[in-house]
Length: 256
Image (tube, rainbow, N blue to C red; front, side, top):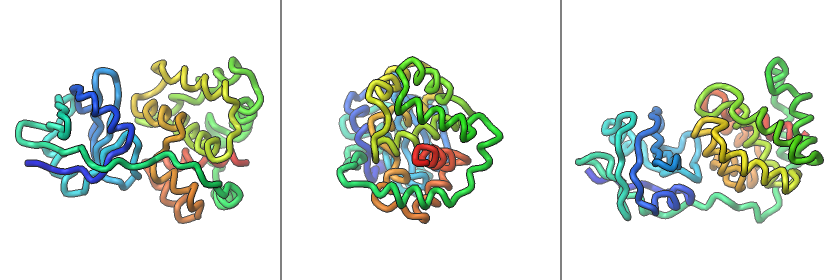
């Protein structure tokens, strides 16, 4: 069986160009993650949760077929054009790449702020990410020294449960606002890049943050730079069990 991907993210394309061996890292209803020995992760699946810079997009029928062919820790071989899922199953990955970094036009952050402010985030006041704590972190990113900011990064990164802990998703939302209207001091942004070389969070959370640190976001997030509507915010809120909501909250604290 030979299947064809629909599109590929630029990060996934760069990783696959090395033709290394991968292993199945995790499996979901919407697709699965593969990882190589260098801990570079690629998601193969459909776009219900958006398209990712480190993702390979497939249609639903292909997803169902591939999920029947894989198991956790299964070895996956990579060729110049093809991912060899099994002896009888191949996925052609050499397809058009998706652009993810596009901050050329001015984002309407006033509209985004107005629309995000209509949502109720009071559930965060009883946890680790209450508004007072987050306000201190935003202030530190803007004005404080690298040592102070490192303390706050370590507080956020990896905090929470799941493949993408809440702290990672909140920080991703904060970084999105930075790239629409820069507020993080350059040394503080560089410190984040250094910290992400440490094992501070899950591999999936680390992958998302490394992309966000470069200004690369999922399509559900990046859509807001072109159309910061309530409908697009609602679509982002529905991603994962809490990932979308945590990301929007990160945007909210950075904007307000």
